[in-house]
Length: 96
Image 1 (tube, rainbow, N blue to C red):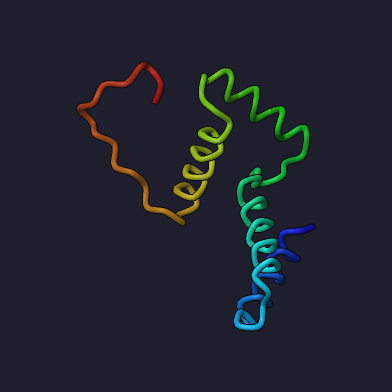
Image 2: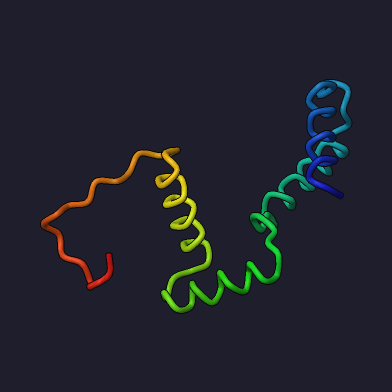
């Protein structure tokens, strides 16, 4: 069952909620909950996933944290997000 078909089932049930048998509604809601629980994020090509895993391990952060950093920096660089102000007086670990 795909996410699209689950979404269509939920929309259909919402349109006819008064006529929907309780058991059918429970099944649809359980399927939706299962789909939400098992969301794994964006599927990546194996080479991309390996590169991200390698970089994340080198930086000692999770792949999700690395993806968030990359995405935020790309959005800032391309003017989709305002650049964060850097506190000139704060100390760094030698990496900027």
